[in-house]
Length: 161
Image 1 (tube, helix red, strand yellow):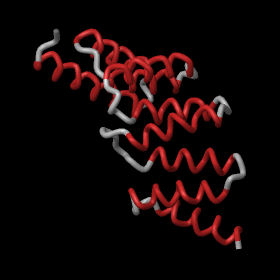
Image 2: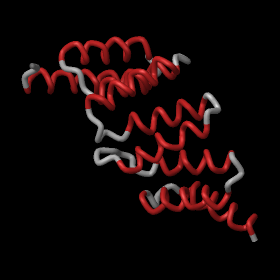
Image 3: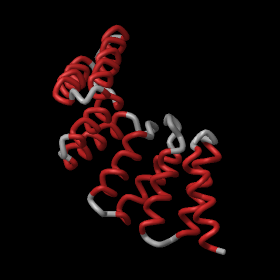
């Protein structure tokens, strides 16, 4: 069983991996996430490892990492949202919906508005404008600073009139 010190070290490695990932240094990010997992497996490390894989086009590997993350911490919302996004990328919109809905309900999840935006995108692509608007409004309720979203809502509402 990993100690508190191991857990802290693992999360430090995740943070370092995220820094490399933001710099588009995916191989180094992957190495750090895997090192973190070897010390103390966390939902965060598996989720971000999946995210790094997705940037390499390894969508099936990304989904597999998110599934491991969910097993480790079912209350962590990011892997649910990420699976939904990966399925959207594969044009599997109907399969993405339940994952995004589960992300909305997760207790541990920031930024909370992402699954709403992603569901809005799914519904908009499917031509379900009213459902898309409902999701976009939900996103804006959770993060009023997304100014693009307010404009999108206004544009969609004007097309409905």
